[in-house]
Image (cartoon, rainbow, N blue to C red; front, side, top):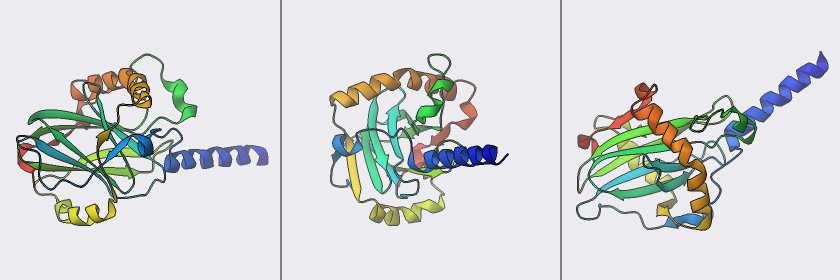
Length: 216
């Protein structure tokens, strides 16, 4: 019985460590992130979407940000901000925590989705600024990730200056390196499955929304 209890305790400890530190983090943020000065206005005719990750809770958790067409556009770590200048209109953003290595076997078919997934549909206007906060909480086997839109009536809007003070690293994208291409290709089937499930499938009720009038 004591041996069993020790095994259960060790297993739970491993799962908690996986949740807090991320067992398979996005592998090349430090080498591939394009660091830049923070933009205060969008480029002419573009919308500017600011992804904020002000909290460093969760240790080494890294969150890649994809578009629904499979393009890997950026990534965040704790205490960072990613600014994405995009065309006005409808945009779909996908973020997730990488699946811990010991759970890779849970993917039974190509396109099956395992792990904490967050999907945001944004309708953005030209020459406007929008904000999205990456929220992280402890999950059973990995961090739970949320793309939380800062909407027009959100209390978090007044916290944005405080967030930006914490976000010491600002990036505008990722270098298209060999590791970038490898990671994008590896995740392409997963992104297609996420789009299928969240945008028009069985998980559509978990799709979050950012409206055109939710700008600063």
